[in-house]
Length: 447
Image (cartoon, rainbow, N blue to C red):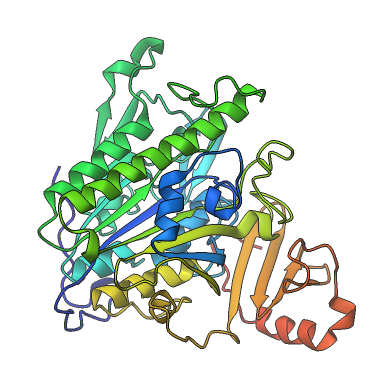
């Protein structure tokens, strides 16, 4: 099916295209699913083999204080796409409380909130700047026939799972190619022949090959190592004295690493390596800490679903030969809301109005950037509204609207063990003032 038509003029709040750079870089944004901060060798992992990602970090910049958009899947991806934090972006949780699309699956009826027509995504910004845009893997921001479909949000080509709950199986009965449901014959009647992760890699390699002669944006949203723990082979970990799920978890990460190695080799083979910037991260913190086996969260407190560092901090690697300094580790503080304006600047485009992120291109290029006084904001609407703010080296959390702020000094307490709110009343007061205007109400997640 044909992809959505290009935007015209300043539709959907786009400010319009600036004069493009003489040579716009290709952009590949790779995101794992539920990968822990310490699941890669370059972030201290000792058991899981990730030679290609370690090589990616050695050839580029490794960030130690980068944050996901949220602590769970859908809102994190919404922040990534829109440049708005979870106090403003359309999708603020995996399941809406009001409205949305009612979906029936194995978990019972769920309301899925799609992106709306007026929401502007990074794909639309780059498409307006002349890029061909593709996505494969997990979307999670729109059900069939809704305004949130990838092809209706700026992507020329799309292949993968629309619904994040259905992405829990790696041998699905079908996937979506643009707006067409594609039956996977090898997975019918209980058979397990077509492993979705491998299909996403094939899409990525094909997309890059076909579009090597013009600027492209590829969003490679892998679903590994999210449970359910399914994989064709647990090698090279089959003989390890670990629980079976641990073997699969490790094998998933190493398989992803292998395939990222294939993608990087293709860039060199096509002679586009030096004009392609590659990012790698995770959508949120580890679902399981795997303590005593992998220690996936390292020293960080909490895991997926928490607003502590273990739920929000992500590995982030950026590589662009000759432009991003090689072998550098950066402590720059940034998050998914910054991705849209950053990619827009790389493409020579202007981001839409009303976003919360800033461009971190100066940081990527090894230059100074004044970001110390800005606030990073997260909220998570579960049974009650939970909020978190990062300001300078302080992290504040509120577990419910009627609870006092917890405050942690991350420069001295990365594990968030010592609540120092009583010792810094001026910081607490400052963050309280910010919180008073940090968010807008959502019709889908009313307080």
